[in-house]
Image (cartoon, rainbow, N blue to C red; front, side, top):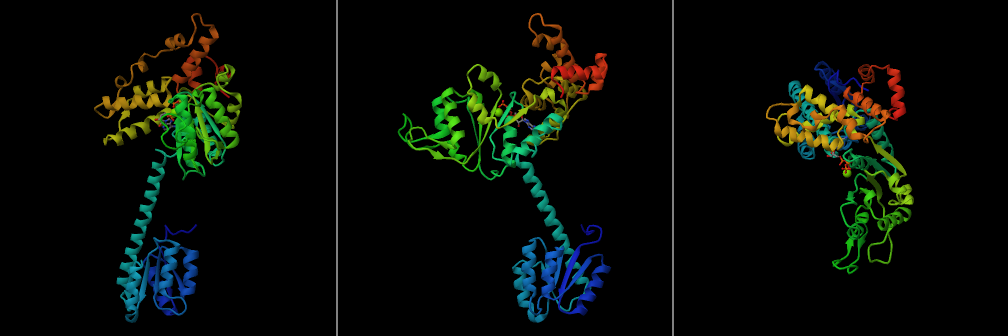
Length: 459
Ligand SMILES: Nc1ncnc2c1ncn2[C@@H]1O[C@H](COP(=O)(O)OP(=O)(O)OP(=O)(O)O)[C@@H](O)[C@H]1O
Ligand SMILES: [Mg+2]
């Protein structure tokens, strides 16, 4: 580390005359710069490398290594490093050429001190602007990358998901992402792709539930001309199009047994056979899959192949429903309100205190997507800066614990079902705060802890 920020811009002075170096060093130091001197071009090259100065001030004509070489070394080290060349009348021509090649400035010897200082100040200012500009651009690119970079959330459960995604991203393993509808399965799939070594390659996805079997297979594997009515020319399938990239099979639970057999072969052999083709084609694609179904249950019922499940489920990522991570809600609310404001070119709106309370309490069966839609709608319905409860879906205000018990329970629910539902509801109303929930329930925090463990709601 250097203390450059405290001590003025670092200027490297290169000249083959020790006397000039010394007088410039004193001048610059007195004017608040941090001068370093190099006697001759060779030392200059070394110091550009080791010091990475903010500005270089170099004589143009020196034996062995001259100013133009200093210029090109500086530009190579850092294109934003300004170089000021000092020139005598005889070398004016090459100085002007140097400016064309990217020197920041040249100054003709003999020069006045205030002239040199003015140029140096401009050069450092210029550099600061360039560097700031670059940092800003990088920031923008980072933000653009997946609408917010890291998927939003700070709850323990969500952080565990992100950590797992970050760990598996650089491997080439197949990942099965499971979670209720709207929990962010696609968001996580993209995040894994973005952090993987395939990030420069394509990210393609298909919703397996959206197409009839015959079309799905030709979309996935491609087909050869004439293989069925309508196949008028060869078609590359998505597996092949995602070459060197990632292929995301969404709603994998919706595939038919016939398609499942074919997918199994792809996973086992890393090869596809286009519809109507006789030869297999090797593919280099990473597979991610997602489902909102309970695949264990599907396997028991015989609608999903166990062997395919094992192949897909090399790494399992479970996305917790939003009601189990209400800590994430305020962050998501802020992000969605910000985004809507940007889209509508208006200042961001806020939830009133009571509206936020209701948003935190509501169990959001449609998870993040439902929250996102509710907020977007509320923004449209609200003219001023504060979103009140009335602009949010009515079910938020009508949702009560009694209804929750009604909704969840069979006609005569056993007491423990009601107890579980009620305890979880109170916990949720208290924003996940166990101490406050225990207080509201009139039980000891350790009792609450035990009950939650029994419900499997706490690890
Ligand atoms: N952590 C998050 N940060 C930001 N946005 C999120 C997050 N999670 C979900 N979203 C947003 O919520 C919506 C639903 O997410 P996504 O499509 O990934 O869910 P899904 O689990 O694939 O849903 P479905 O099962 O319905 O396909 C999207 O608009 C997504 O941008
Ligand atoms: Mg999805």
